[in-house]
Length: 374
Image (tube, rainbow, N blue to C red; front, side):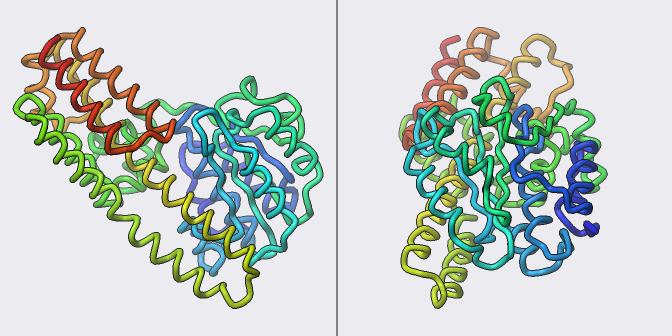
């Protein structure tokens, strides 16, 4: 029985998905491979970790045991999370590492879960190398692939997975879900959903003082652009990245503690794999924090665009209306569109693993130019 404290029970906004996965876990009918498809922000990754927790827990997701707690913190050694490590997609070395790991016994639980994010970025050789393993994995292994559409993933991969569609939630519906879960006012919930893309991520955002501080610093940097020189912009980016990286210290400590605890019974090869995986997780977390900061900028600029056309318009960032109004006072629609395009360029650079410091600096200079010279 999936307990109320489990991640699966707490899934919000995707009632059909929650019901489907819960029945599968409780009935012992979980598939060996799933493909979660839906738009970014629809809650696919949260659902993947929820399902992983339920599969690793001997009680189907009690929410309180060691396996559940580690899965909830996303530090369980038997849940392997993969994202593309190159600008063009997954590396064949990532596939080799995965296939080697599949053959190993679980470290703590009786089950292992492999979450493969952005599965549409698997190249043909990478996907083909996984085909047989996904089709006939060991009994203790479950694959969860995440993608935007089945049309962008190799048909041979799709045919070997249980497809689970995720619907796109309207902003107001998502905000109401977040408000019920957190007790936070609806306006702030709308902002959190706009920044994070979905209700589950928005709940986490509102519970994190560090992530909200990143948003404050990012909006402050945009607000100051008209009065900032080159040195001011470089300094603001340095401070912003420092705030983004601050929460990673706790994750590093948790990773080190786990390595120290497991080092006595893990082989040297297994330890090396775990260390490499930890490094990738830190990089992914930092990248995620930067992308969220960029989403804050995009959301603010969209509000500015609305205010340029109607100074009484309803906007998402109501708590930053004064900033949006100041920017709208001197901007034009053409300039704001160019500024939004600069954010998109920055997102592409981060996705291609270009240095975050340089990426954010270039973006702020481009936004300043767009707003000053519309």
